[in-house]
Length: 149
Image 1 (tube, rainbow, N blue to C red):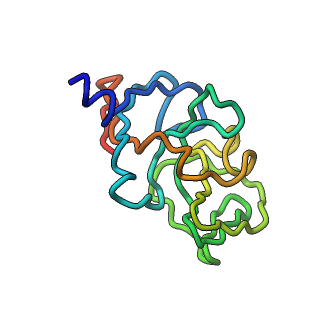
Image 2: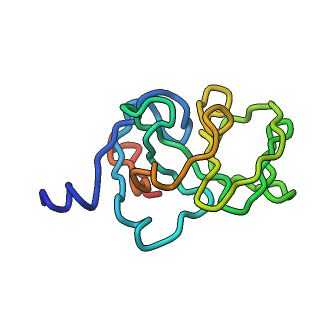
Image 3: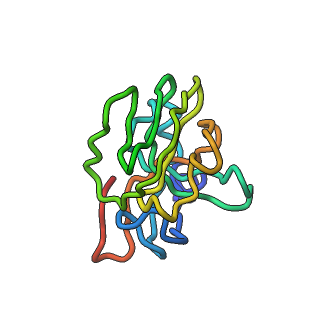
């Protein structure tokens, strides 16, 4: 179990409100630390990453833009490669605008689900995959909100 914990999974606690309503302050998550070694990052994956602003802090964000994509925001709607993205997950709309950003190879565009309060790629820029700690696989606490991602 110790080896699994050290190399394969991580337990993470959500701090803040940037991923509400999907994740809430205090939620406990299981992070898969090895899947991105053997498979690609997918649009809408929820990831834990080392903050580009403060190395001692981890963020939880959702992948919106993949390498090669063009991403823009227009009155709360997300457009990827000039097509409005159908976001099937719960989120809080931010009616702001953002000019188009091209995502180069090896980088990702990330947004929080609570867009009006989220510090995300609109603020800290594109993120290299090397900053990802892993993919969120499940919320196990509180038990009443158990979910698999």
